[in-house]
Length: 158
Image 1 (cartoon, rainbow, N blue to C red):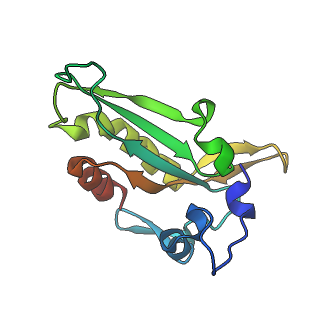
Image 2: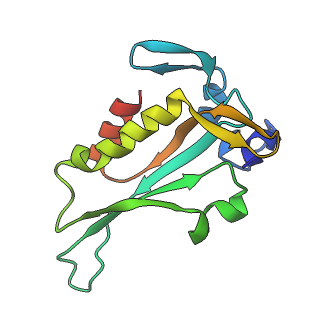
């Protein structure tokens, strides 16, 4: 879980998501939830967690008249060779078909509520420092080809 905080940024190369312009700009951006600006910046603490959300529809059967939309989260705080392994992927659930979801917010609302709480901070035990501390967890990337997901999540998380 220390990969993000120990990643060495080289401005001449992009080797990971933490070298990208979006992450680099967040490091200088104060966290704002609703209209309230919190007294901190994104990823200012080495214990802060960066997550990526991904979903895409697929047809699980040959006839493709049914679809499924898995909702998954990746933990970017672990090394690239491990973060996309099955054992490290967080599965939130699946939105059933037969078509693209028309009412995305009914499926995503519980996730958004939890993500907002995580952005405000939650108490967790730091096994290295042997103390309880407040950690902050943020969505760093969003990967979907469905415009409703993008609009809903961008609206709810900003």
